[in-house]
Image (tube, rainbow, N blue to C red; front, side, top):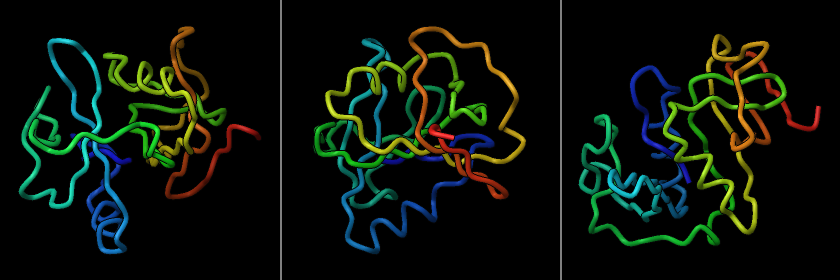
Length: 145
């Protein structure tokens, strides 16, 4: 599972292209505005199967095949900021925190970020979910470190 880059986030286009070129199944999130739920959809052709969603973020069209969270073994997680302890600050909607918190089996949760996004501390709540690994252009931070 990955996400499509929005704004100044780490660019995921090459990662997505590599996944598809190597025959991997690509799952992308779709945010349902009314229910505030993140749903998963299989995508084979991002150019044809994505549309602008909430906040203009490109996401799978509603007619893309649904994917089960139980089939996901890796999640590239977006975020605004991270700590060296792999804490994550999202955009405030709680979509990924609810999604991760509701998983029955936890896949590898990895964040790709720029080093300037790694800060000493973040304002966190009990519902905030950590990732296992934060990778920047200059360092890797493991939750277990």
